[in-house]
Length: 377
Ligand code: NIG
Ligand code: FE
Image (cartoon, rainbow, N blue to C red):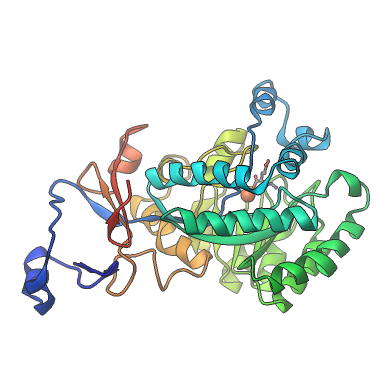
């Protein structure tokens, strides 16, 4: 039972109908034959960009690696050029379109990172767009500052100077404008060193931001150990993390956000979800929606890969795509499960259990999407 957008009572129909508030029900939705699950929470996206990179995807199909394209000056830098040349309203339109696609696929709460500006002015522009999209669409949008996504062209071979700019100019300015709730860094081969990642995250923590880390996506780089040392709110990717790195995450109780659609799109091995779960690492799922390594807005697709590709059970995947992913962006008190006093964000599935999500391959399993009690798709 939902009241003013929040869950008032939950349980068996007959029990809920006995509660005092049931005397005043104004509208009933018949969900028979349809399983009800919490709206998906996508805690890792780069969904604020403009222009696609189909030509790079074609290069990857011809066996060029993501890192080779990046080192040739393509990849993130390609999108940075387009974002710098685009006014706020065009970026807003392009971001909102993607966010509404995600909503249709069942995502009711979404994190979006900056990281395609890589200059103070353009990072601020992107974060303003991300915040605005949270106001003009039904979703809850959580903004993350990812100024250290890549070293921009004008700083090539001067990683340390760029890191100084991120720490001394970008973080203070973004924190004072309250534009981001988290700070993230790409700590990987060809991106930012462990030492520089630590410097940036330490500065961000002092300025009041939550911490995230892109780590060990392209190689075993030591990012997991850094994530454990700093006790970040979540560490993401972990495709190549070694056993010791995974144990350090378990010991520090750091949440791992896994992005199986990225591994699928890059044609590389998945993160070792089973090993993580058996070591005791809490696991969440996200799309990583971006124009390079993973052009995907659908958490249902990610859910399917988690089960059929990474060997997670349906219950593990459901928990990872809802409540654990809400923890990854500190939204767990508001969303991520169907509990009294939480937001009435839920999905009706075309099947009697969440198993239909990995079972019905490519099917439209998300029949209806409700945000704060209202049907939004
Ligand atoms: O999470 N360091 C990698 N960043 C993104 C890709 C962004 C892009 O290629 O535009 C990732 O895979
Ligand atoms: Fe990412």
